[in-house]
Length: 351
Image (cartoon, rainbow, N blue to C red; front, top):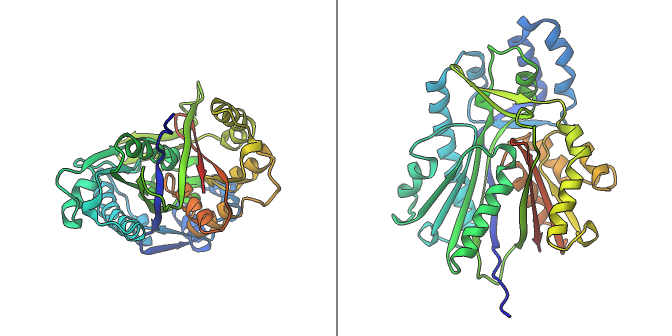
């Protein structure tokens, strides 16, 4: 009996924009912007101190956030920033995989923080040297789960055409969704948590030398949770939607869904050697450790990425994966990210 091919990770690369947002400085600036909210901001101020974030990165200088912006401004800076991050992350991933742009047969682009038609990869593919017949698969709307769900999609495309190479690029420009006009808890939390970044991965189904192999992938979408996380769209731009129940959901409902995912593949967590999670925030990380019977403080790479880059939405879990693959640990790794839907995205990787 022949064994079905599996997608191999040939490289995992990351990139961030040039502007640094120091968390202490952001709290001072946010107080100035939100001073009209009075007691609400005073009540929310501890959020900035308790995020576990030291710095983040943005495509826009700090002065940009003091001004009102509508869709044209936000779309222009999204596209400019996304194109630059696409090129930076993709070039690194191709170099690490010892590939040229012309070697790539399919490009999967994941982003939920801006709208671009033509999509991001179309804007840069010709100047970068990709072939004119490359398959383009842009995906919108997966939010924080987009890194793993995008990797799952890219792996399926690689396996479907053995010998082909697939480039996955995950880009989120979260900071430009900041709304100085919106005095809400969700907007204040977003201003304390989110940063910009990109990750890129090259995959192929027939390579022997690889960083890891994607074993299984799946999702779980909980009913009656549409309002837990997402975007509200109005004339000024996107508005963040967050429910306070996210850490509770991670603590209470995520483990049973993950157990079901493993059971479908005749596994339990006794078969898992290591873990990688999307670090949505310090409270989420703290909820994940007991939920998965991990020692308190054991999610070191998640805390390291959160501290150094903030929550970049979809690419963040791939930043964590890159950190984990740099260590000599071997075996089966379980990966998980949560996103709007409300959805859990799961994966096991052998390395």
